Length: 317
Image 1 (spheres, rainbow, N blue to C red):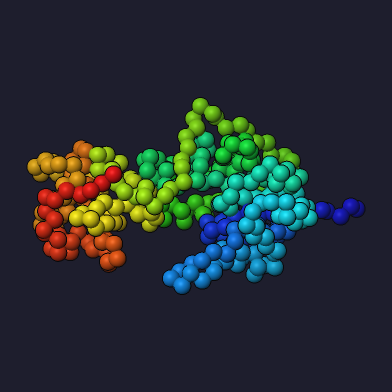
Image 2: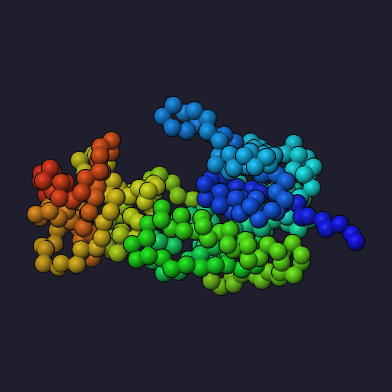
């Protein structure tokens, strides 16, 4: 009787988001022959070099690790020598050239943290919250030339909590990702799984988030501002400026009491223990704030300590 050949799997990933998926592959006895991750990077106050979380998992399991600075001919030779049948990618952080995509016999599959074709791009978690989605999920797709445009094997979905923040949704999707791979990996490896094209009429995209994207535009509605704050928690953090000082808004919600007098957009109203910020259609209630370099303050403490800001106007984008 012929000996069963175990498929050889390569894994591409970098942050803690990718850890549960690699752990699942290892614990499910798949033959992970190499892990490709980004280079060690300075971290913390001392700027000491720290390994990506994925590297630590791979080394503890005795799996070879490649950390190419550039995806050049040297890396291509090393990766080709591993003779992978399939490569699994989640949050690797670099765009792969065609010369690498063609190395695994069964190609590359990517776990993307949205229900494609919605939110192709690098910030699908934040986009789902910012755009007010009620449903999101993880999609397993082939990697193609266009960003997140490859054919889809399948997905799993979950409902967003009404007060979802990016940090909590990140944790939920991190756990969901290996379940999607579990659904489809056997069929991909034995050739029985058939991917389907994405619906190009329903495509939406999301860009990489930069630190300055956290500066709020108070000419938006309270609902949009609330979603933006939750989408940017904990990073890059939503903020405005008062008297040339950055005020990070950690928690907020639309304020429904319409009895307050209108003022200029960006005007702060401090009433009793409430801190209210004028916006396009009313007020945003600030529940927890933090001056740059200071400790977080709840609204009651802020209202007592910064009464002088009453009816001053924030600087915003």
